[in-house]
Image (cartoon, rainbow, N blue to C red; front, side, top):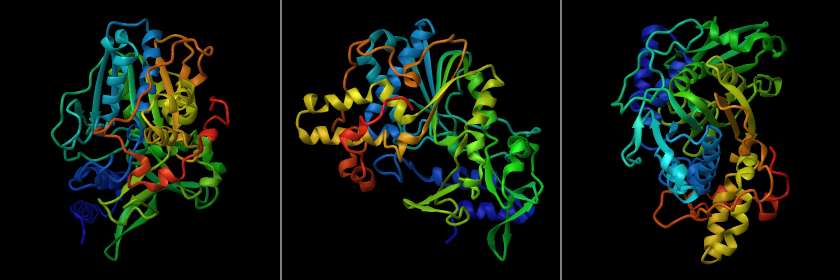
Length: 431
């Protein structure tokens, strides 16, 4: 039986003959009855978990990095942390609670605002709704998404702030245009209907932004290469620039620089579909009932933010970033500070999940800044010297909180394939 949103997509394709894949993905994920609109998808009762759900140590180490940013900006009386794509607000709660234990002065200055496109019942009360695509008119090089059905929105995003704009696994979920290379030319892959089923048809790109993003790389791509272009990165950067007058942009996601993303070894593209915890390859199956993501072009992130005056501070893997900020220290203290071995093991499972080399540890952490000066950030470069500051408080799982107990959860693959303790310390923190 077709979902509600599948019927909407079919009607739109029937009326127009074809639509861009970006429009298809937008509707399938966020249209009426779309994947993210039905219910909350993350956490213990959801389809998957993100880093904040694995352990409160993720939020704790983000707080450590935010405090350093606050100091680098001159310890202003008001430091605004704005999270886009906040989901159920767990990261916001963890950062706020840990900041109070970490540094009362920083906690007093910190104002954490959490925003998500879809706010479901049960999300933390501080999560506000926002529209990530405020425009309704397209322009050359932009993503010509149609006007969309909008739910109730909370307060708008702030402007002119000093602080940090953050996101964790946000950019990979923005709608993408799909393309293929034929006879050395870039053709866009549109969504159409053939014999009552969704299919694709290749034609000239719907916007010059697709060809512009690829540039001269097209010449190195093999015949039949397929890929994705995320034209939502530009509007996202403009939104970030509107929020932030001075400070940092902290972006955590999976992806590559452009030459690696559009290389022959990824000739089939990076679009991934997930249906009932299973990886699938056909985006036209289960429209509205499966998730879709694509790897992020971090070169596009650099360019889009540079257009608004932001410089690249650096990149790290999530594994290197969290270890540089003190995750090794957290793990080493578990046995001495936990009540018993079971508590130590539960916390160890969550912390190690954050840095698995073949999982979240391979995510990229990008930091950009404007008006912050040349400051060496610990998350990117490691601490200046061992023991420069007292060890921060140890964050632990607590009964009744919203974190996933990986050792006994419905995600057995996560707990069963964790690296051993010794493996965590087997290489230097640098990414």
